[in-house]
Length: 117
Image (cartoon, rainbow, N blue to C red; front, side, top):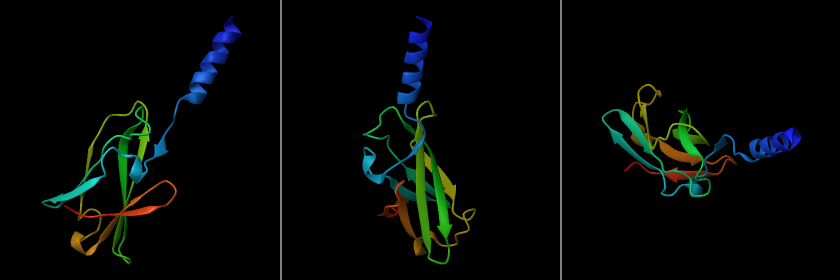
């Protein structure tokens, strides 16, 4: 009997989704970006494919030579539910965000352009 419980426990642990990246197309609504004072706000929605996973992190990466801002996100079960992430533009090293093209980067590297609203 103890082995049966151990087997079921291992099976459940193996089936639980872990941390993974967020694809642009899997969000219920597309991510929105707006600028408020000197902060860039990224608004996301939970995955329509993985409702047990919550987006808990958005990571900005700046490439000043190409004038690009790339956004990647991570989701996992049991994380704090968040729908908005803020980044200080100056702390990112950007003087004029309007000169930059912004992309959402999927886990497979696919890029999708996002416009500031």
